[in-house]
Amino acid sequence: MTPAAPPAPFTAGHGLAIRGERAGEGPAVVLCHGITATRRYVLHGSRALERAGHTVISYDARGHGESDPAPEGEGYGYPELVADLESVIAAQGAAGPIVLAGHSMGAHTVLARALRRPERLAGLVVIGPVYEGSIEAETLEYWDGLAAALEQGGVEGTVEYVVERQGIDPAWRETVRRFTRERMLRHRHLDAVLEALGEVPRSRPFGGLEELESLQLPCLVVASNDEADPGHPYAAAAAYAERLPRARLVSEAEGESPLAWQGGRLAREIAAFCAEPEVSSYAWRDG
Image (cartoon, rainbow, N blue to C red):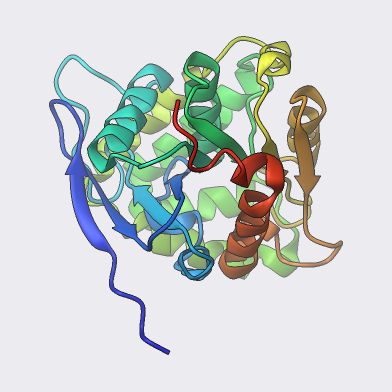
C-alpha cells in the first residue's frame, strides 16, 4: 500500500494568519475544533477519513494552536469565528459542496455558518454541542473560573480546574488530565486563549434552538455520555438532534470512551454519513 502523502499546510484569514492543513483527495470535509483545543482534536490524528476518499481540511481557530491572535479591534465571538471559517473555505477552493464538522465551539460555528449560508453544503456533523439558546450565569462562572486558572496557574492550573470542576467520573480523570495537558501545550499564544475563554462563552452563535428547525441539511449529531464528558451533556446533543429536521444521533455504548474522543471510530462514522445517498448525491453537484 502506498503511504498517504503528508498533509499540506496552508494559511488563510483576513488581517491575521489562520493556519491549517489539507490532506487527501475527494469530497471535502472541513473540521472545526472546540475552545482550548487545536485542529488535531477533532479526529485526534486519525487519517481514516482521507483513506475513505475525502479531502480533509483542518485549521486552528484564531488565537489557538498555530494561528494568530485576533487583530486589534477584533475579538473571538462567533461572527469572527464564522468569518475565519469562510476564509478557510475560500482559500481552499473546495471543488463541490462540502461537509462541515465541528466539536463544541466548532459545532456552534458550523451551525452558525449553515444558518447564514446553507448553499453549497452537503451536510453537517455536530459533535458535542453545548449552547442551548441562552447564556446562563452558571456557565459564565465556569468559564471565568477556567480563565482565572489559566492566568494564575498556567497549563497545570487549567488541567486541575477542568478535572475538579466538571465532576468527571474518577475512572476517566487521568485520561482527561492527559489530553487536556496535551492540547493546552499546543498553543503558541496562551494569552489569546485566555481572551477567547472570556469572549466565546458570551457570544451567541444563533438565537434559540428553534432556529435549527429551518435547517434542511442532513446532519449527524454526536453525543457523549456524561460520566466521562459532563462538559458536553448528552441531553444537549439530543436536543439538537430533535430540533434538526434531518438529523441522526449517534453515541458510544455505556461505559465506553466517548465517541468524540475516538478519532478513528469518529472518522469512520463521518465517512459513513458522507456516503449516505442524501449527502453523497450532492457532494459534486454545482450550485
